[in-house]
Image (cartoon, one colour):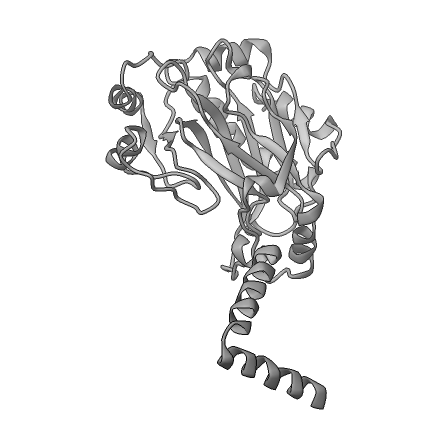
Length: 311
């Protein structure tokens, strides 16, 4: 028996891979016009404008959204409101400036949202994506309808090795959402930092990490509504988001999902500070210069030279 969203699988199967800036599928007009209008018109998506952040959070909770643990975010309403008011300078990662909140609709009930959410999590969709991206092994789906509030930020990163696939479908209810500063950047390393991809490629037993924004450059953004991007995380799948907008009127909204490898051992991670060779070189040079200014330091340097000559 067919499903009303079967045409989405046909679109995935027929879509051509793009290579800029890395291998991915980018499908415009993913849903039919009728389906997309119903999605963005749903009360859980096109929520009522709020007057204050507190009212916004209350309204989102009233239609079924709950704060979730998510990269670049906090789950504490009080902590988030404190940051919005400028009373907290805290960030959740050294490569970011602050944090946001992500709320997931839990669960969507009795509407097209429920049907589409279930279809994106279905075995049929998982099988179609696994075949398209030639994924092997047992996979677990984690997906949902999410709103990302102002301040949400994840610096450039390729995703953890435990993820087999990532997708992001834009379902923003705002009339001018394409021009808002909320969209995903798809990026490449700047030439001087490109060695990091090679390091990840050659060290499969080390997990990948976030890096500072200025180590990468944006090649494209996913701005259009009713567009979806799929990619299989690898050493070059750099992407990032920094949401800076008025979330009281409307919110960044996505159907977001991942396929995870069921066997997902936690791997050690080399953080970006350890990959900053220039900083380490500067620190080593500074230490050497400091040693040269003291008698004990000069003696240590002399001994080191003599030892090097002997070996």
